[in-house]
Length: 352
View (cartoon, rainbow, N blue to C red):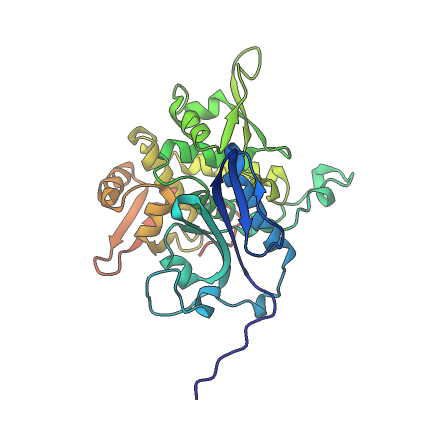
């Protein structure tokens, strides 16, 4: 007789569907008894993600009781692999070109095998502690809260891989990363012209236009100030409003990502080598200076076709970022070691 473990009482899978209707899309949730809720077309994607986030925050379950939900359903959400393994995290998956969104507990192995999906950062769904941090005490003695800069950047890259449409250019992803980490409590962000010039985006309007067309942000008309030295925008991704903890910690992560995007001559190669440099640094162990990850995951998080990987790595190798690099032809695993001067230096011990 085959024994089977009992599933936990709390369900850890939530699915919403955006159905096109006359007058705009309507959100239907499998877990909500009420009927569909009409949405504005411009904010439908953000509303779907925010709805899933509310379910996850309300239906809390102890870590030791959480199981891989696709395993409970016979692993029908992804291609076959060696079996469930690794820690349990929340996985956001997109189906039917963004009409269906699913948030579910998934093990690391199943998460890696699921297409059009990304692990949702704990910093996105955790309860905000901003009020506690700003309860009137002096800021001089304030200590950073939550994960360090490296973990924040790594998790945000994974989140944006699911939140942004397929085919989003590297320049738009670099910009989205900075906007998501620098936004204030009302989802507004001011990007100085100096930061854009540092990313080689100073005179480029394409990244802004691409994010606006994706309904991810909306720029305010006209210059941000009398000198026109910044761009001000409102982010339309409601899921980002649940980031925690405080904004100063996120701004430090944004600065960390900016420094990681400019190793040597990487910026001269264009936005894609810069974005890949951030990704590699974010997944590098600060203690060992090396990293190991699936190459297709890098391609998904950075938004490029896997066939372009050799050319991107050659560009990065010429910058002096990489001390060594190996790609396994059988598994597709990517193993690298960063040059000592480009190792992540911070107090974050969350690297894999």
